Figure 1 (cartoon, helix red, strand yellow):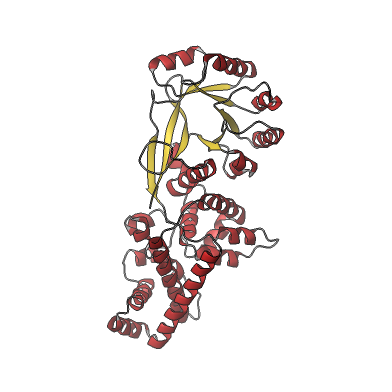
Figure 2 (figure 1 turned 90 degrees about the vertical axis):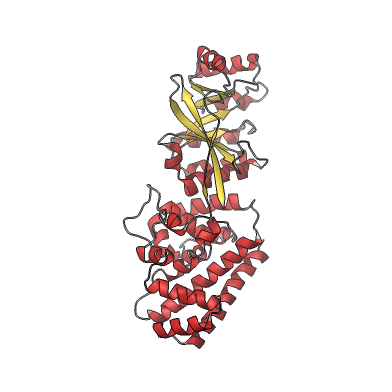
Length: 414
């Protein structure tokens, strides 16, 4: 499925790009869909950091991201490096002592804080105190009354804060904002938000809470956590995309999820699982995705079982991931080789998924022939691999049962 993020540049007085604001979009229509703020921010984060890549979006500049009161209380901004983001606090967040404490912690950690559409509220004692933790104030230059604008401009000048003029529509607006001492400018006069899109794997499982539970144990089991992630195609894909980003890119290619967990670290895993849980709690699933994921799970389990039979001395390598990712092109709607170029998978897995002959491909072909009940092909392939046909049918039945239990468990937990 295709996913989207809108990116609008913020310019300095020389009309050079200073930063970008990342905005939620659900399609190519350049307007904000009617969704709650928590979901919008979570979607922006997932699509920017995991699906598209923050380095590709930002060109090395900081990105302004809106945070709701709930996400601030959950300390979501601290999951990202201060050099990557500016924490933009929405105007809907009412100043309070709790908000001041959150902002102090963010400042101590090195984050920059921007107040979006800030309005000074004399009746709220925390409204002025909040300014002491801010670095930037964003002012709606189009709709904020002149008297209110001048009040905010005066406060910013007195406290040494940077001002961003939003909704700068004309050259006259730009020149007027510059004359008032604004430092940065954002609006359609410069650039409409540019929509950037990529593809994501539809999510069916809600494994996140179970993973979070295991991560929170005194001595988390990497094997248990790897098993939970492995059975979730979307989560496995996102984990591999993350590990392939410049911040984590491994020297050696990945053959299983356990390797990825060890390389990434449990703390890093936990933060991304949490962000995904916030995002996925609002999404709907469709029957086509469920059936495709069911097939992928069954193939993964079969490939793993057959691989264990054929490699009784040495451990199996890459069979589960090969089966799991074997329909990724159908799920995402893009060619398999394009998907694999962005993942740090071992070349044997990539070759098998791209149709090149190797032992993993032979096992995957056998599994697909069993799935499609091609009897002559099953007989031929099992003879070549020295496998008993009856044992293969037992593996198929057990794998289907294993998949159904996982899916039914997920549906019961909804």
